[in-house]
Image 1 (tube, helix red, strand yellow):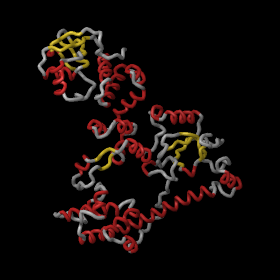
Image 2 (cartoon, rainbow, N blue to C red):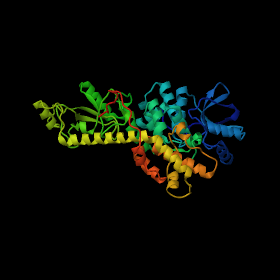
Image 3 (cartoon, rainbow, N blue to C red):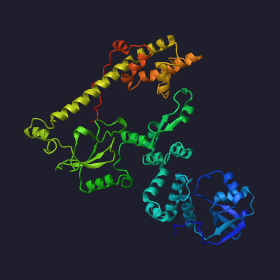
Length: 475
């Protein structure tokens, strides 16, 4: 089929009564602009481009391309309009609409996606064939058709202009559950921080999308790479090829990370992730050395997510990458004794994580006293429009995760001063409670004159844990 303009010169142009024009399904969802503006232009200059139609019965004509021109003509009560008449099959009509829409700058990508998918369904063609017919790249057509997999909220945000095509393409590559997580936690940031908690609908309206790069960064950190995804050849062709080669050779495949740990929501309890101190590159690239014990490593999360290359994780046998550990294992002194530099790195991070967890536990036990001290101090305080506390109100978002019980500790009040105290409590309590409280809490409490260390000294003792209740961290 031709990929030329469906309304190109060379066809015979005739004038038909506007009342004889009928419309059928259009791949475009929406008018793509003001009909009033188009009608004003036609009233001044006339219809410069004929409508493309096909015969329906003996008297009427079905509009293939030019639905907006027909609507504007009806608005102006024009008796006749110029048309090009062609005999076309349903598939040809659909392809003509898609070709016309692809030449417009205002066509929405979701409309393109529906058109491409419909053409593939009716004509039983692949994305490659659609791309060839329309003069598009295969990647372009594939990304557009993937947009149909966006969850309803993502499609609505896209239609409303709250997210752009880059956000939509990145989201569409995720499963529905992953999209919902990304929308909830990684896509938006609060644009107006001082809206009240009860104004939740307004706070949603004042969220703006982060950049596409920031969204992709969140996905890399929080969404585990799926080596079994059906679209790997299109999205990660190098990784897909490496995985297929490894599968054919019955080679072991392991998940790896460049970091010291993997975030909780990117872990798989049934698939260990080897972090940076537990693997060595072994593909001969980037100054690495191959070895006979290499396996295929796939970056499961973090920077480089989706990369695949040979790595060595065998500390008991490989003298190329783990000489000291392998020597010790050969002597029988240790099956996997780490070399001293690696041991120091591992110990350092394990100790740091344990220290941070102990600090969080201590803060959690002292949390009620911290909040009570905060309330007492704020009730007696004299809020001002300037100063450290006022700066905190402006700088921090009132987008909090406090529960109703915590919010009930501080009444909102009726005066402007009460409101300032209430906002101060919300923002400060959000820093005093939660995962990062040991880091952020002392500075926040100090702003209102509370000594966190004094309260921590009087914190309740930790409750005893049942034996075997601790969960092992993923390496």
